[in-house]
Image (tube, rainbow, N blue to C red):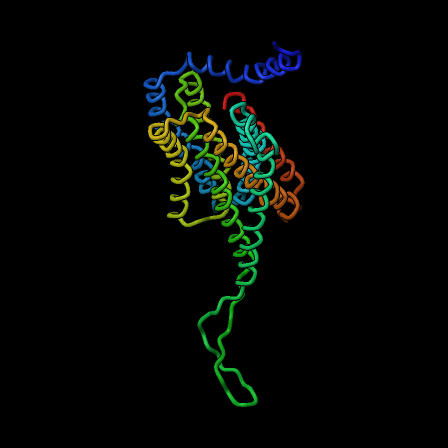
Length: 339
């Protein structure tokens, strides 16, 4: 005989399971391994090309303006657009996806995932990690300002004439460039985390209804994200070989993630909706989000709007930079409708 309490518990359990049952039924109708694999192979080429276009555009634009009177101003505006893209990527794309992955019915019904907001915690750890790297690298640069020149000059002392190695202080501009290079490298690490998660999730999916619109959406996503990273790389003025390497790594990471996801599915049978895959997606996404939020707010936006002498001296440039920041944020946010 069923008591009212047992009946109410059964109804509650069915209601809790219904989203999973509904999602499973919807996914089953679109599940086609062969069609999904074909779309993934197309996406490898499309996403790689769009990534190259996105990251190289601001770099070539900076090279075009190099040597011209407006070079510094153009670089600043490009970088502000890039900061808007990066900030929107972290807050509108990466973080909600991480929360959604760890809130999925396949994960949120388990311990300890239903007991604590792990997405927020890992995002906090990512921001603190970025701060730690920033502090460590900045401290290293400051302590390394004096480089031994390797030249000995005679120095007169009470004991007589002796040789002494004299150091050279690095000019302030060189220290700024070192800081910009550090920012670009840490930023790329955060974006690579995000790109691997996106690619692996698509690679593990067998749902052609999800993959088909995602290919086009991710192509535009990579263009704007590439423009964000490319703007920072352009300002840092790396050597040509380093620029080429960083551009290749950004462009190849998402396709590599797709291949990785396909291999994982072939070996383990884990789909993009398996609990383990969702947990990994949520944790990596949260970590990436924390890194990107810190880099966008502290090392890009705050640095330029509050500590840039060029922007402080010209009001119109500050307005133009803010408009570029808003345009970058808006353009990337709109893409959240599709990816």
